[in-house]
Amino acid sequence: MATSNAATGFKGGLGTAFYGSWGTSVVGEEYRMLVKSVPNHVRVGKPVRAQPMMKNINEGKGLFAPIVVVTRQIIGKKRFNQLRGKAIALHSQVITEFCKSIGADAKQRQGLIRLAKKNGERLGFLA
Image 1 (cartoon, one colour):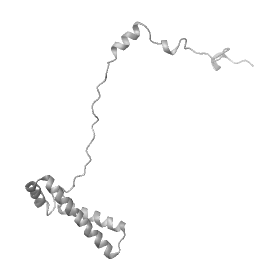
Image 2 (spheres, helix red, strand yellow):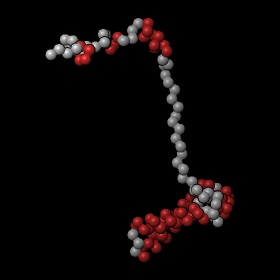
Image 3 (cartoon, helix red, strand yellow):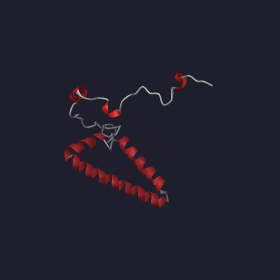
């Protein structure tokens, strides 16, 4: 039962077209030319990251937006954000107390707080 060498690729051992070693594939003048063609260092810039968008989609709209914008310009952005944070915290406490009085659970309370935020956006309080 004879088989051909071309079909199996074997003739007394493994047949290969590679004669040499991996370490000596580029030597001498070829190596020096290759080293000269590669830059010594590669400058990599900082990756550009998009800032998270946490803006109000109704910015500048709503019944109270003009008042909010004027107030922010008068008292300054830092002081305005502190005042806004206190107002939001106080409103959340009122919602929490209301939920306690009617026996609502934490999930319903969180839903009411989210609803208050959406209403504030629509009315222009978060402009």
